[in-house]
Image (tube, rainbow, N blue to C red; front, side):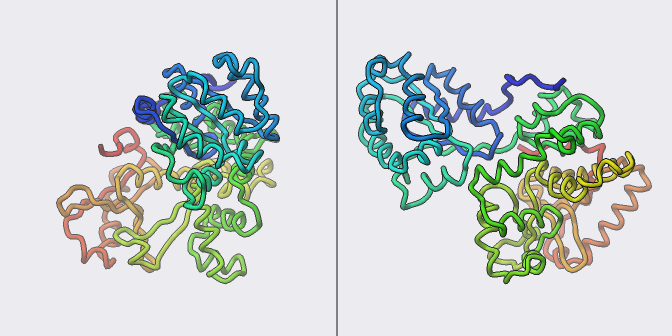
Length: 433
């Protein structure tokens, strides 16, 4: 039995507003976002509101794809009841002769482009010359961010510069996770569950009832566990092939964070890493971090980490322990889950303060540094995934102050508030407006 109904639509209010404005002004746009992030649900809702037409492409030949599209579109567009176009050029010529709805949505557009590489050029001509006359808006989307980017963001591509809307969907928040599944946001067990699935609505639908260990095993460790197969599907959708990018992702997921360490483990020159790292960054598999106050221009110090909580669990916990999992004691499983949740707690705390980063220098590492106001006031915090008593918190605060004073950063920022962010902060920790 699952915790959430499959047809529930959560959040995306700002995205819907942008699509409404786009529909009112008409034009051509595209929507990107990682696999399972909720693009289709958003597009269907927007289509319902506008009284538009939605079609989801399938993999196959151009002839198959045109047949499926024509079968769906003929109910609302009479010309297609008598004519079945054989080419995309013919399809768009017929489309230009019809009275179109306010919004047309073609989902999984990359499948069409795979089936007929000439389609982007055909669509470009239609967007330039016929779409403005139709008084309609056209949106396309798809699961492969890399392919959509190549069609719309590559200067050499026919569709480059044609889109007036590019909407990129991000994962949903912990707040919406709790609302969707009926969990209490202040309950640490709710955050532990969130750390297994992150802000991906489709993953929420997979979570069964049960205790934390049962849920973790159902999601990842059981023979039919869907999330144990999901990283492979995600990599395939994005067209990531070859051993080097996959090996880099594996190592980063296991905690190898520095380029020099990655090169050493892989046995390759460090100069071979920038291209695959850039691809993994662009597609959202990993994040790149610099110490607080530094950037790619000012610092050679950089750490990489896996961005998605479910992907982080896959590489950091599932892969290293999957073969011996059945033999582990319940206490050992709880420890692994707590370690994973602690890492996600650090990420979550930083996400709640705009511009927050870790800071590291030599053997010193500080979990969170953030500028709090336009005045020179800063927060320096340590993130602990436990419930602390007063004595523990006082001791940790004293250690944090000493640690900070031993950094070069302490000479640059003067007005500092020190804080320990622990489980009791879960309910009150909110991203500032």
